[in-house]
Image (tube, rainbow, N blue to C red; front, side, top):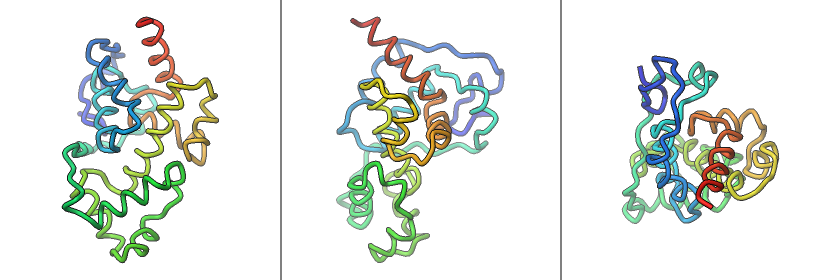
Length: 193
């Protein structure tokens, strides 16, 4: 049975996977690209996870057993002006996007709160919470790769209320802890230098 991100391999067998260097090498620069959209970022994270990065035991136990839809990377927000304004507002909030409530933002734009999530999912393949998490994760991944800040500081600087919340979200998205991700990125940088 696949995990929350559709990974069937290693989920059922409980065998540790290995990092497939060839499959993951093109994904790291894409993850670190600041101009990449949130749906593209999440699609890259999911592809990195599928490239052979096994979820840790705790992620496997806590995973939701339904398949998450793939984010749409061919988004044309010009066709969805209300959704585009909401997404612009979330992106402008940056690390504070996690503090914005869906109902508050819906009221701000004159949209029914239940309808806002549907609009976003229909336009981009991601719901409100996934967008908010994606914005903060994008900041965190860059900080993990480019700085030596402790993971706790990266979590706070990226807008997470606690290290546990950050760790949980990171594991669900990437299938590894933030520390494992940093070691993976640093190990690749040393090998390529």
